[in-house]
Image (cartoon, rainbow, N blue to C red; front, side, top):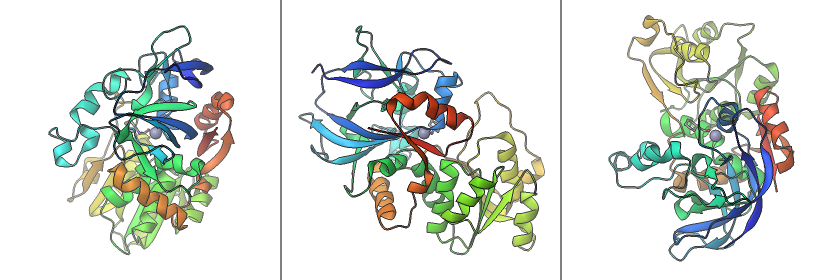
Length: 369
Ligand code: CXF
Ligand code: ZN
């Protein structure tokens, strides 16, 4: 096809992304060509830049994106030219052991190929100007003007939703809201604690509100993030640099502790707090993560008493079902997305955007095209 377009390319860990002109491969039968209109910068991209998450290089980052379908392959189903789409980073085969058990996030093909950073059929869809093959982070590589994906990863959503809001649904919002609505079993009136008020946590706060929680305790180290959590639905806020979140949850629940704790800080102290703050028989959902080699310490007593602990990487996402539902919630004003956008930036400002994320100065910087 020879389509040439701009992309942010990482050539080596701990080096700045280079915005350069790259070239697309031919569209395969099942592919769609998406003109990217907005991409959110997520911590997982940052982990690759910093070398904490190893991927082959050179690689196009970006996995929280929305855009318009510009071309479809002869066998692409369920999507047409002109459709507005949010990209899913979880392609899956649909018929392996885990797909069959409603766990596409554990799809055998998905997991086996993830470290190769290619598209789901095992091949790359882009090359550098000098002809070298490019890798794609998380089956996408969407920090670019275009992205070629199999049709199953391009989820059609309502055209009314602005792209800069829509893109957030592709990763952080899906993970947080889905953690509350799909993974946890929050009951009307429950006391829910959300630890860590970044994009995932602020989305979890909103998921807890949508689920009908009676009290939502936001926990963070920064007052400005806690203020934002309150605007999005938190009924209480605890700054753990000053106050004890376990005490707070117990005082609010006649000594029991929170019914559900959603952890989204990705810090050993947050994981530990999650098990301490939940009540006996309550439910803990871990959405954050630390380096896989990091030890996390728990007090054994805090894990007893019939507590249920679950890990989720994508909020139980079924993108075909969930992306349009979340888009509608945003259009109805029940899910606030604009509030998560700290800055709108150009592709050329992408390194500054990641720097802001690293410093904790941004919930989401969104690259808009
Ligand atoms: C992550 C969660 C852990 C696995 C890789 C993707 N989520 C989003 O960035
Ligand atoms: Zn992400």
